[in-house]
Every structure is written in C-alpha cells, then in structure tokens.
Image 1: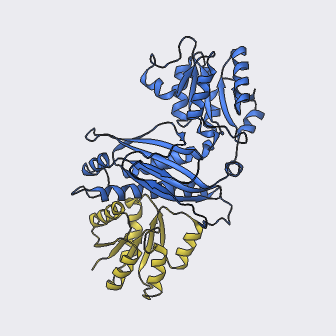
Image 2: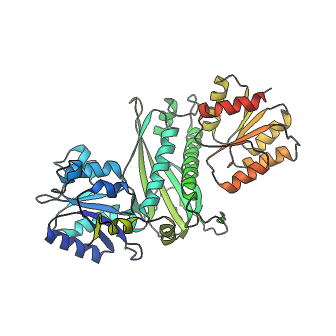
Image 3: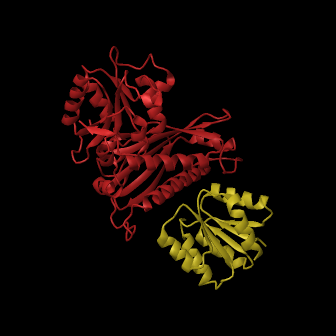
Amino acid sequence: MIKFDKSLVSKLLVFEDDKDTQTAIKEFCESNGLIPLRQQSYSAMKVLYSNIDLGGVLLCEAAHDSSEGIHNGFDLAVRIHRIRPELPIFMRREDRDDKEDLTEEQQAAIAGVYKLDNMDKLLGMIDQFLADTEYPISLIRRIEEVTTSSLETTFKNCTVKLALPYLVKDKLTYGDIVSLLPVQAPWFNGYMMFQSEEEPMIHMIEAGKTSVDSKDVDFRDVMGLLSEVSNMAWGGLKTRLLSLHPPDFEERNLIAVPITVNQYKEYISFGTDRSQLCFEYTIYDNDHNVEPVKLFQKFIFNIKWTPEEYRAADENTVEELVESGELELF
Amino acid sequence: MAQILVVDDSAAIRNEVESFLKTNNFTVETAVDGVDGLNKMKAGRDTKLVISDVNMPNMDGLTMVEKIRGELGNSGVHIIMLTTENDPNMKNRGKAAGVKGWIVKPFNGAAALGAIQKLVSG
C-alpha cells in the first residue's frame, strides 16, 4: 500500500448530486489526503479541456452532462476518457461492484467501480491508479503525449494504445530487453527505463514496420530500435519541459548511485524505495500481420525528485476555475 | 564521392535518412558516431553536407563539428544537426561552430529537402 504524502494532495473531480454521498466522499477524501472538486454546472468538458491538475474522476451511474447531451455516467466516463485518457475514472454503482455487464469501451474507460458501503475498495483502487499522488498529472500527460508520438513515428502504420499510468514499488523487470537513459531536469534526476520483449519486436522489424533493415534481423537491431525510442521520448520530453526551466539550469550528473541487477531474478534496483511511475504502451499493426508489441516505460527519480517545485513552475489553473464558479471545493 | 555524410548511432535513423536521400538522387555515406564521422570527413574532403545527430557514443556530434572546423580546417562543408535535443545552449554551441541548420527529430525529409538541395548545390 502506498502511503500518501500529505504535501502532495491530489484533486478528484466529483460528479455526485446526492447530498449524503457527497458527505461520504468528502469524509473519505479528507481522511486520505485528497481534495474533492464538485462539478458545479454539469458542464464537465470545459474543466476537462482546461488541463487543470486533476488526479482522477469520481462519478456515479446517474452522472450526466446536459450541455453535451450525455445522460448517464457510463457515456460520460467514455467521453472523459477520450479527452483525458490519463485520468483514472472510478464509478460508484448502486447494485453491483464489477464491470462485467459494461461494454468493452466502457470497461476500458472506467478504472474501477465501487459501492458506497465499501470505500476500502475505492481506497485500494486509488492506491493503484492515482499516480498523481506522487507525480503531477501535467508531467504524466507530457510523458504520455511525447512517448506516444515517438512510438507512432518509430512504428509505421501502427496504432499505439496506452493503459492508465500506475505506480510500482517492486523492482522486477518485464520481458527480456531493457533500455536505461539518465534523465535530468530542475525537478528530478534519475532514469527512464523501457522494457519489452525481443521476439515481437523482431517480427515488427521483419514486417517492415520500422526503418531498421528488415533482412537478417537479430537482437542487436532490436536493442538499437529500443535505444532510438528512448532517445526520441526523452528528447521530446526535454523540449516540452524546456519552457518551464529556469533559464540558467544546466544538466549536471555529479551525483550517482550504484544500480544493481540480478539477471537471474529479473531484478533491478536503483537504490530507492520511491514508487516508479509506469506507463504501458501496446503497439498494434494496422495491417494485422504482426502480433502486438508491449512496451513498459518507467521513471525512477532515484537521485532527486521535488514535485512541489515542478508544480510551482507549471501553472495551475484550478483556482481560476473555482473563482469563476465552474468548480466548487467541497 | 559522397555528397552527403549522415552521422547517427541509430541504425534506424541512418537507414531512414540514407534511404530518403538516395531516393532523391543524392550520393550518401554513413557513419556510426562522431569518431567515425570525423574519419570519413578526413577521407572525403569533397563532401558538401553533413547531417549529424548530437548525442552519440565515443564522440558527440557537436564535438565532431568543432573538430571538422578546427582540426581538419574544413570551413566549407555545410552541417545540419538532426537531433532530439532542443536546448538553446546546444544550439548556440552549434551555431558558433558553423552549423547551418538544426532539425528536431523525427526526420521529416519532405520538409528538409529544399534546404538540403540548396546546401548541396551551393
């Protein structure tokens, strides 16, 4: 279980009309270092398009957005997911606490469901999916956008799908290939790691889905491709973060800690117990000739991580929305 | 004699740029890092244009450019950086070394073609 750092409170956008439910959610949030923001006018889209620093969304089956012609919580979840795919959506249900009766699209949009009489389940889901408790959502969005774009450039005529970001504390690696790139900005210093499997990547290269020569492909080609993906993702992210930098910031890698690897146990340690920020990308061949490739991207800020400074540099507009009446603090 | 030298440690990028340039009737040579690039420049002093990555093992692209201008005394070759870097300090360093252009990856050949043709023919 991840312990919330109270200095890093996460904001949840709440779609609930029922007063008793609002009170229960308010008490739940207060106990767990979360800030509930209640949608004032059921005009959700303006808030969601505004790029405010939200950590997730709580809604119920009856939630709606009249201004968008959305009359139930399931359709609202699907719409929110399209606009802000990085935000976990938790749905309160009346009669059941599973998603089995929902459509595939609704299941993909909703991170988890809970009932009001089992808030522990909601807490467990928040622990699992609310990456914003440790990592600002605007940073998460930047990473997702830049990496997706890098993968779409690298894998031609393919579709890149992204699962919800999540946090892990374990040090196990996925697959059989790994890239590690030191990453540094004023607010963090650590590593970005990509992990994947060799064989499906080889098939992608052999099918001509990349710029790598498709003849006589071996593991070296795969490692080269993984290296290029890492370079492009970090290069793009650096560019996106540049506008937030103090002008005099210079990268310096004066501090280093040993990274230890046990290949047999598939274990890698960066010498920190801080949660790793994880993203899972799946690359689908649009021609359906090659099996999908899964790529896991992990950020390990083992040397420096000052999210409060990042948040200060990244303008937060939630106060403006509260002032304008679009949002209400509970 | 190659008109254009492409320097990048990524085989995927080298292939992509080389293939695009050959399709557009340029003669192309490739190098895998700054050391390799510098050696190829020593051998091929008639190269008109170098397209180089910045972050490479053994020798980075900007150091290679500085050595081409300094050690080799080659002030005539045009140089374009093709990189994921967008840092103004790096760009300034490149500019000071006589870099003519700075393209942020991914490589968009169609957009760069006009400039490449101009530099190679100039």
